[in-house]
Image (cartoon, rainbow, N blue to C red; front, side):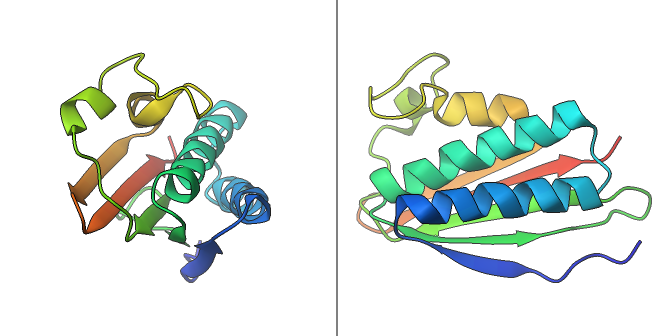
Amino acid sequence: MTAAAAIELPIGADEDIVRIRQLVRTRAQEAKLSLVDQTKVVTAASELARNTLTYGGGGRVVIDMPTNGRRVGIRARFVDEGPGIPDLDLALTEGWTSGKGMGLGLSGSRRLVDEFTLDTEVGRGTTVTIVKWSR
């Protein structure tokens, strides 16, 4: 299988979140993820796109399909230049929600994927990268 080229999409409105969900679902199918794993990565991507819009003031996502020699995956990198996350420990606390999102939060998104990295700085913005690998 040849990995698909990276695609960058803006996150500036609710409609963008729908487009991101659709692209993540398509790429997850191309990576031959199980239906359960497709649902997990789409859910995580949807939550992170919503966070980018709501808390980061918008931004972008870059979606690609990495390979590690034997498996293909889907990677999504969400980037905003918003206020950043002032209390990262609290934001990553299981079950914590600001009351504005789906209630999954960052910790829920992290639980749904195989790899989760978060880089944030107050006043600079936030980048969250997730990866889900085929089994």
